[in-house]
Image 1: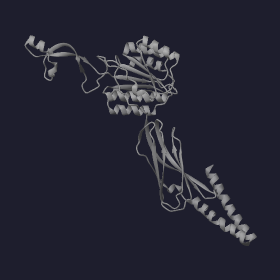
Image 2 (image 1 turned 180 degrees about the vertical axis):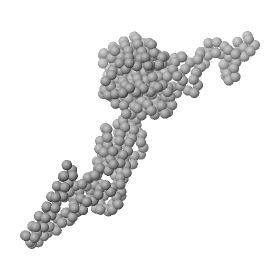
Image 3 (image 1 turned 135 degrees about the vertical axis):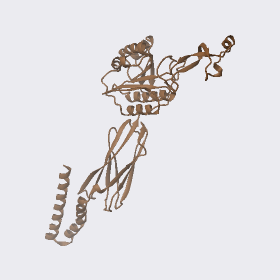
Image 4 (image 1 turned 90 degrees about the vertical axis):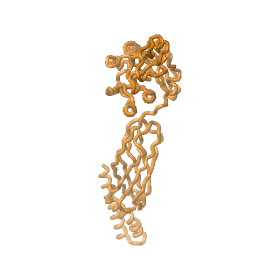
Length: 395
């Protein structure tokens, strides 16, 4: 249709040219020839523009970086180069963006410049993977008799990770014989809990020596401490469509980052249109993989979170801390969490609300039921994630 419209406009232009010339020939006089010669430059320019190749433009999109956090601004610069100085009265340019980003349009007047550029700014980037497909340019004559457009392919991609809050993570309680290691030392000793004495071994600290036992046995004896392993966490995120889903993703990102920065290890499970599970690990690379997954995840799950816990029950690791992040609290979720927590390890539910959203009476009642079943329910409002563990004392 665009090609047919462009050909029709060109035919109409030639027809107007012939009519003005015929009018001047048959009518004669100053006025008729003045109209013809006045129209002649526009006709010639339109004909020249019709054969001018817009594909000769060399376009380059410049992005400061390829990774952002949700809510950050993005400054984009688009540079154009061409081989000749064919006069262009105007150039309408549209940067074709995908996903939730709106197409950025602008109008420039290049004239006879061979190189020019324009810049635009996106104030708040939404979470996700965004692809910049191409740039559509459109130009024409001053009278609007002829227009021409072309899409120039230049692809760029950015990953916008979920916004996170600096959370000071502290485990709810010290748990022994639990989880994987959180440091290079697989087994750690709690030096506050001596359970016996043993013979001195090279590498034992001076402060570990039990002087009374050493005096009795006439040889150096050191304290034997309770061995423990660090507090590792497995996070299960609810992907059911909900108005607070972005807040759920943001807190999940904040939580896993805080756990890993603390030196512990964490895993993540999400069940959306497909099941994705990350094993309990630590390190910056693991954090990057988790954030990359959270950047692209959508609220498309048709499976309630309690069904997820029921389905994944036998694959969950034994005696490890589990944290479920959701935006809705139900009785069936508390029941499944109670079963999973009693057989697999401690269970904590994080109920995420918007800034000014208050819990309902039913939710208050369910929180009391959860407490009676030894299920910890933490109510968090968006914007207050930093205080998630502020009242948790390590014992």
